[in-house]
Length: 454
Ligand SMILES: [Cu+2]
Image 1 (cartoon, rainbow, N blue to C red):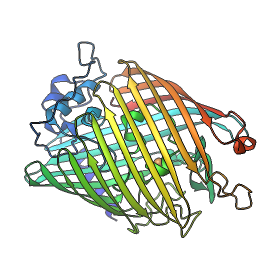
Image 2: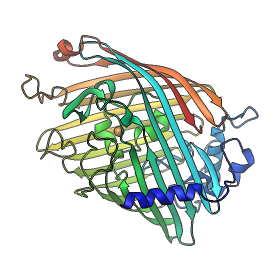
Image 3: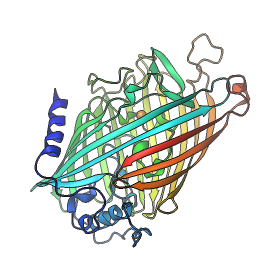
């Protein structure tokens, strides 16, 4: 199976040769490791680009919280930051968090996060649950005479939780026990990514790239929420996940693209079906869907993308024969000094069926080394809140808004960071939903998130 080759290659690269450097705790180190940045752009820096502002916390009080160092490394390297799949983030977002090391010519990166959480939602459809979300990521990358090779693997232990996932009012998408999940977030699959990427230098500052694998992310929408600085400490997945970024785990993806420092154009063929509720396996690759995406990074602070995709039967388990055509635009801002924000719009056309639209605005602001505030506002037209065909409101569309505010206290622990915090949500919805959600439903989440790397 292709996956085992990829995995073996990643792991072999990770296991081989003496590891030269560990963790973020190494100020000179970062500055002279060219592979550090994991750039999504060609390495040749364009002379015109303005540098990202130097992070305020690059100072004597660094300690183990070396987030600033990655920003500096990224300045040395130049170019947009890499998001999930082949997506681009602003350069100001900095490098991917994690432990970096060199092994021969390979630059290795490991990142992991486990979050112990408790969520409670009020109202007739509310629920509460203590649960854990998790992800681990291993990357290996090297430069070659003709360009660059990169292997990425990502895993989650969320399949350990029941298939019904955890409470998240007004969230919909995927199934548990053959039934659509409503007011819940599904667990993610064990295999979140097994992919390879080859970048070929085709002209000065221009690369042609190929990306793909048995599990990957097609060129559609913004970087997935768990890879955005703007959602970094937010414990709740967006209720608009299935409008913007639910394709982040796709079984079978092949992407070709052209990248310069400021522009990236790409197209993917991939499997339209969302992961089924068996979360431990690698599913069948169908390559029955396609997407295109254009990304513009006009300055180190901005990344703007527009994408369009036609997905074959994404919700196959509940709506076989229904395709989706998605149009998604987003603008991401990161100032390199702890503020990351995104604004996004999506239109999801069910074929046959209705078009429903969604808005999302979110931000995370690291006030200093220890304190972060975050928030998200979503507005979505959802016609999946009453999946029971016999229900009088079945298939009716309701426009719902969610307002979320949260806080995280961050404690550096050697190569780890422990973030303790919580968030509080309020909603706006049509009165027709009062009988099912209560007049003023609220939800809150508490979390303790341990991350490897900062
Ligand atoms: Cu997801």
